Length: 572
Image (spheres, rainbow, N blue to C red):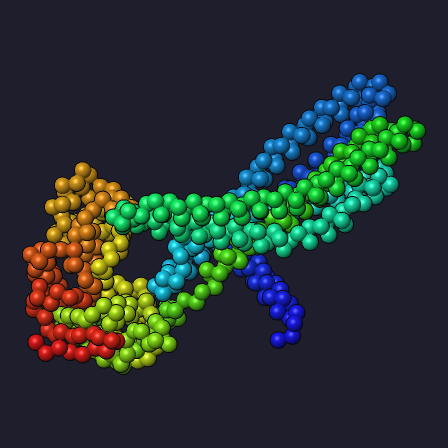
């Protein structure tokens, strides 16, 4: 590779990423064009009112005070007050309207990314740190929102104020106008030179924030293990190290922000001082009036204010683009499993007949970890057991049956219809999975049981809970089914959490029930009772049981062993 080509290619990639990020945000802005135009029109009118105030001050001084005409002083003073009140009220309303529409735009962005995340495979969440994802959805989206909330309105107001102020300044004194903006090119050049530092510092800080969030989330979820292993002190030391690293990057960013904002401000102050020196000279020699100098200084403040805002927005834009690209990185991940464009509806014809034909799937193609050449015909209403050692491919098989992935080879059908032709929502209504890693949400017991069927009646909930042998426990709780359980059901035992998850699956009334070590937290006696309940409740439903406890499961139609990715039937 030719020396010097790599930086050029990287710059081109960055440019493309920025353009794609802006186009992505643009699709969320288009529905708000109408309200956005209204806000811009109101802003333009308010800027016009604001621009008139310094000139009224000039008239008040030159035509009123300097000539001793108090009537004119009072008239102009009252007019200035009225206009100030109008600007204050209407601009406040306009600000409220703008923040509302910018909030809707950015919340749609967050919702779009969240929706995308809900469609990604388990592999994605295995590779990405939870703290990093949360940092992007929360901190980075907030950074983009802060910029978008202030930027567009500031640009419109600032542009109109700048153009109007410069026009009036040129009319009042072309010489002073030239002095006022003589150092502007130097300010712009300085900020362009500082842009790479701003981007890098912002990116480093966002990465450190994600690392810190990941650390806290992981440790808070593992408190019991940390306590059991007496690891609190070493985790505290790691947190101190992460905090020091974060503080180092934070202070570096503060220095960069201070320099990028302070140097242009200092140059503006120098230009302002020169204007007063030259303008004061003209006032003392009688070639300009005091009112003209005061009005000019006011317009200069209104002109340099937007200039400083634009320069500040330039820096803020660099930070916002870093965050926007980080957020969009989540959105760019391909969805491995998609709904068919024209799905075939099974509906009431669902029976639970599943056929796997020469199915193969590998998480790691190099090592071929997964399953291969799996042929399995599960008849409707059949009860089968799949056993085998850890790492043999059982979890992969379940993920394929619930269509978290599509097979790399072979095909799967449900009641004669290809998996790829069935809408995901219908497929997962027909097939329910109860996992050994029970997931419960913060909320009431009823909320957790009805999660898959939000509109279920109380009678249906109770029936499902009774079938899962958990109703008596729920009734003993302070608020019964309305009792709020803690984060991830932390207030419940392992067995209670599993029973709730089973009740949740039973309420869905699936045609196929997959139990992945779902009774691992139950004692032998309770497990036997539970299996008898399943036989009664799912007598004519398909049941696929993944378990190491073969002895506790009776009335099996067939038994299979899954080892090293290959499925074989076991003769009883």
